[in-house]
Each structure stands twice: as structure tokens, then as C-alpha cells.
Image (cartoon, rainbow, N blue to C red; front, side, top):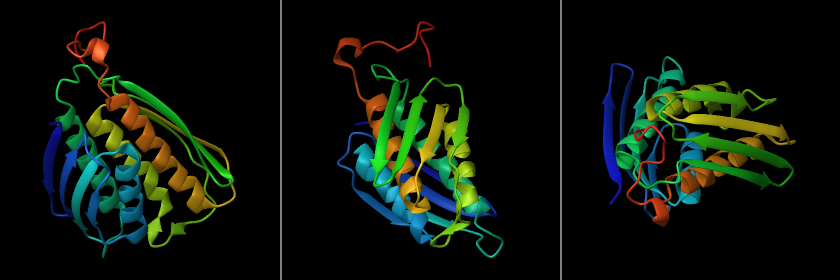
Length: 195
């Protein structure tokens, strides 16, 4: 079973995550930021990964450390669960429409972190979440996972719809990239022989 548990304890945050790639999309999220919890639940559901997360942070300072570190831990958990990445599809992409909004996400589990982020938002908060921190979340995720991630939202009226479409598109792209290709089950999907 491809799963991992990661704990991160600093002066700023205490985060524990258990992630199972080949799950059923079940999530149990304990986080002080409601909309952020909802997005993590959405990510688990649409990726068909199981995720149990306990997230605490220094919100008396602001949300930055909590949101960024959650991305870091999520990336570390997925990287650990993937192991040497033998047999995976490696790359994934998805176009996700949510009402009037459309999100495009493409990723490559290449071992080389890179984020291209194009998510124009009009508001400063969704629920309690400071939306400017979403870029920090995805950057932390890419860096710790070693993934090339492109996020583009070309249009949409509702910022809620735009962000939720991104998380759903990312989830579906991850589901594709992490899937085992039976034709290559014993192979590392790289001409280098390592990822």
C-alpha cells in the first residue's frame, strides 16, 4: 500500500498528515481555517486519496506559516508514499469546469520543483482564508514533492468557484499522475532511470 505519515513540528506550526494514495477519497481534516479544510477535503475526494490531517499554527501572527507548512507536509507525504515512483504515469493534467469558472492544471512528478501560478482573484479572503497564501501553499507543495505544477484559471466570476476548480483539477491531475501503468509497472518513468 502506498501510504506515508509525516509530522512537522516547529515554533510556528504543528502538522501531522497520513496520506494513502490508493484510497477512496476519505478525509478527516482538523484545521483552524474552515475554507482551507474544505479545499483539502476536496483534494482528497477528487484524487481518491485518503487524507488524515491535524493542523495547528500561530494564527495570532497570521495564516502564512500554517498554510505554507501544510503545503510542505502534503508534498512530503505524497513524495514518501510514492517511493521511487516505479510504474507511475508520472504526468497528469485536467480541465475542471465549476459553473462559470474553468481551471487548467498540469503537473509532472519529475523531481524538479517548479510552480507556474496564474490564478487571478478579486477578493482578499474566502471565508477566513487569506487567498494570497494559496500561492505559498502550492509553492511549498511543489518544492517538497519535487513536482512541476502549472495552474491557470482563464476565466470565472466567483473566486470561490475559481479556487475550488483549481483544487479539483489538481486532484484529478494527481490521480492520473500517480496511477500505475501496468505496461510499465517495473520501470521508472524516466530515460534517466531515476526521478
